[in-house]
Length: 167
Image 1 (spheres, helix red, strand yellow):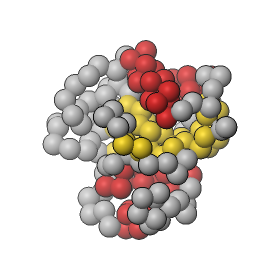
Image 2 (cartoon, rainbow, N blue to C red):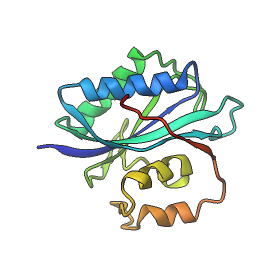
Image 3 (cartoon, helix red, strand yellow):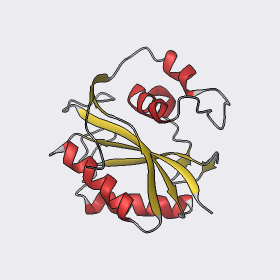
Image 4 (tube, one colour):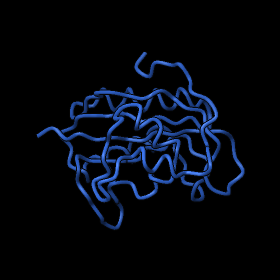
């Protein structure tokens, strides 16, 4: 069965645009994944209290044969392959790949929480997500994501870039 999945991507170390495009190409070239849709890329202020460079962020929608655990293993190994170095929480990242939604499933384990627990607090995730799925309903609260976006007081988005992720 094909699973409908949304993945958030971010980078602020090295050539962030190249890092994101490389991640997208690796995902799209994997035999178990197909990119169905993708958002614009957004230049954003860093989240959290760590002094660091601006980020580039976007969201992709994929269809995949992977289970949630298999997908997590795949994207974590991809992060390492693309040069991610573990640093402090909310610190700089060569590439960050987060599973935001996996069908309408709710998954809670030691190393995986779906939906991503922090996404409802982050405009740099909600805005690109809503660009792809404007009427997406959160599987736990049953609220539209737009409602969460309307309640966020701190704006992290600086610019929307006009770049095609797949070219």
